[in-house]
Image 1 (cartoon, rainbow, N blue to C red):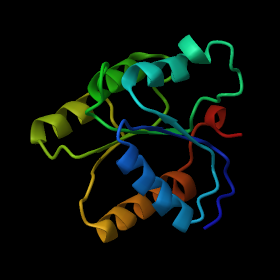
Image 2 (cartoon, one colour; image 1 turned 135 degrees about the horizontal axis):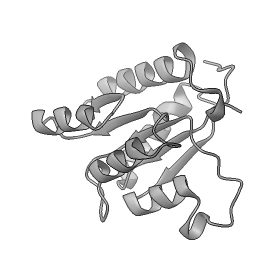
Image 3 (cartoon, rainbow, N blue to C red; image 1 turned 90 degrees about the horizontal axis):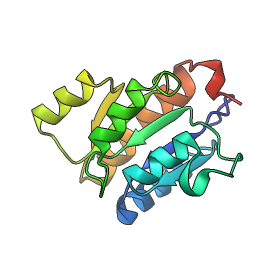
Image 4 (cartoon, rainbow, N blue to C red; image 1 turned 135 degrees about the vertical axis):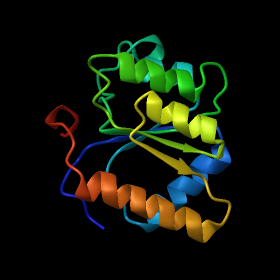
Length: 151
């Protein structure tokens, strides 16, 4: 797979194991766009607003898309989603929820808050590969993102 676009991906995931599994899959898929990781909601908001430890780091771009876990320590994914989608600058960044929660209330709430997709993390490795492949294909090969997020 090769992408002609160079938007970056922000993965907000507290589980090292889940992030490593995601990383293995995207390496297998020859995904070449920059991937950034934040391990909790507070860090993610600092990354997006260039505050906290990211205040003087202008090398961190606004991501072209965000893959968001819901169950994060501190500021959870629901609150991160809400803040992103209420912000005039950030709200156009697509946010896809990637979580273990299959609770219909979580799914509904995320779409109500403006989530652009909701993927339930599968336990089966083949399903995980299939889901990540579909995510990458759609968001990085098929869809067109706002120019402000493409380098």
